[in-house]
Image (tube, rainbow, N blue to C red; front, side):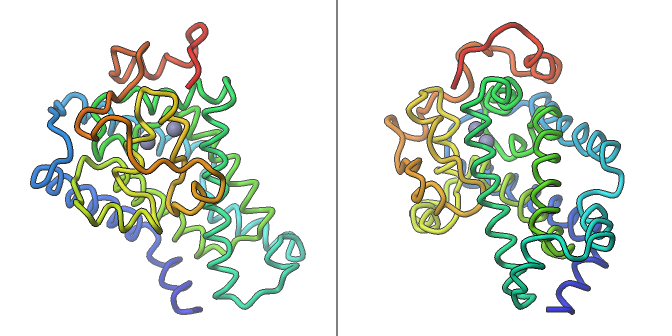
Length: 271
Ligand SMILES: [Zn+2]
Ligand SMILES: [Zn+2]
């Protein structure tokens, strides 16, 4: 366990960028080889989505310069007796696993509340405005949502006492799952099999439907079990995947600038 932790902490930067870029290129190739839907993603649309990823990375770096890992190390050094993992005193490997599962559960509820609370929906709707769901949609989040999510994760990490290596693995997993879930890639029957354990592209595409009966389903991020457990799982959309209407009715323009301004415009319909 110690060697895994050491590997993760010493290779954090390379691991994060390597997994992100490697998976992005792989999924782009798979989207071309086996697309799930016939759709044209323009270079402009792709660049606009990636611009959100770059902007968010910069904003989060300014908001929390050392990132969540340094925050956790700093807090745990200053207050070594605080945190759920300290109180439970679990074996290191088990604490590592428990933290990953609890952080995934937290993201499930955060996502659900982003749909249910109007203030949060103003920001999250920027993500749902994408009419051409594809791998680049995995980084298309409004900076407001990215900042709120950073605060939620920081509080959880401090309260749980998450080990630094688990934070790194969680964040790598987070960006990998976001790219995978949004890919316009047909996994065939494998999609249904994988859905028993993890969130898949078909499962998440249903969540991007314009129908409220579908966009209020499949909130999971990595483990699909939370949707089964909390009654928000929907297996198949009402219309076949190739025909699901994606995006938002009131958001015909999904470019970078209008999406960025969206939360600051007057009232939006709920979803
Ligand atoms: Zn959503
Ligand atoms: Zn999404």
